[in-house]
Amino acid sequence: MSKYIKQLTSLVAMVLMMFVFASETMAAKKSKTMKNVLKKGFLRCGVSQGVPGFSNPDASGNWTGIDVDVCRAVAAAVLGDANKVKFTGLTAKERFTALNAGEIDMLSRNTTWTLSRDADLSLTFVGVNFYDGQGFMVRKSSGITSVNQFKDGISACTNTGTTTELNMRDFFDSRGIKYEPVAFEKADEVVAAYDAGRCDTYTTDKSALAAQRTKMSNPDDHITLPETISKEPLGPVVRQGDHVWEDIVRWSLNVMIEAEEYGVTSANADASKTSNNPAIKRLVGAEGELGLALGLDNDWSLRIIKQVGNYGESYKRNLGDTGILPDRGPNELWTKGGILYVSPAR
Image 1 (cartoon, one colour):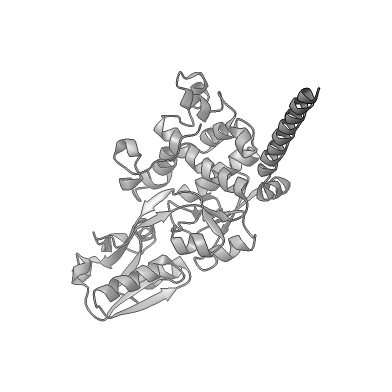
Image 2 (cartoon, rainbow, N blue to C red):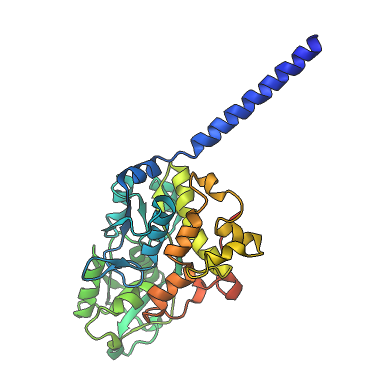
């Protein structure tokens, strides 16, 4: 009899352990941020104050850009509608403060992923949606064609509160060049100062140089020098402490990238449900229960692809067709010679 009691006790203990594990798993799927987003009925997303191709408002206040599309993807996944986003334009100095203070739910604003930011600011970078590097722009009339021609006394316009400012200092100091920094908080102030001739060169990420060049009075009068002086992996950011929300934002971006890899577009997403490829079927919610792992329904990824498109569609729409950066460079898929590579959705 005691043998059966022991077996029964072991069985009860096992059931209790399974119950505790299940309870902890369910608790892990709860997200305070997602709860607040659902309650409000819209996603609050921090973006730049205007970088064409990345996050830029038109005259009617409609935002477009690849950073904007990441926010729209999250809204599609969580709220079912990619348009349920309230965008807030933030300066480089304001962006992290706004996120930590809870004024926005996520940040998608050409922000460089660095160790100090990841470790010291109570923030989590969830991925990279654009691989970039810092460069310099000069006037063609200067005759400068390389950074090797920079001399003592050169003045350089840049943004305060950015890795750009630090990289610029490291660059000039390492070469022993005395320079005059001309720094502003707002990107448009930097562009205006350089365009007005207040500095000899303008330095920031090369993607931003290409984008901001379109705002200058005579864009063809300026060139970006060939040298790249830094690595700038740019990507969306969330507050630390809400692991489920972190996963939702990360995988919303990943879905866009993996969809391009498998050729799933906004136009053929529904038809892809009948694909013979299990990876594609998982991607469009026709197989598996991936949404459950994030506390979402199983059509979350399908909505992202249908409403926002895959990464290639977003890039083409915002940077390729606009002529800002027609050559994707490192932002091409890994299968096509680039370094764009994400974990599999399975």
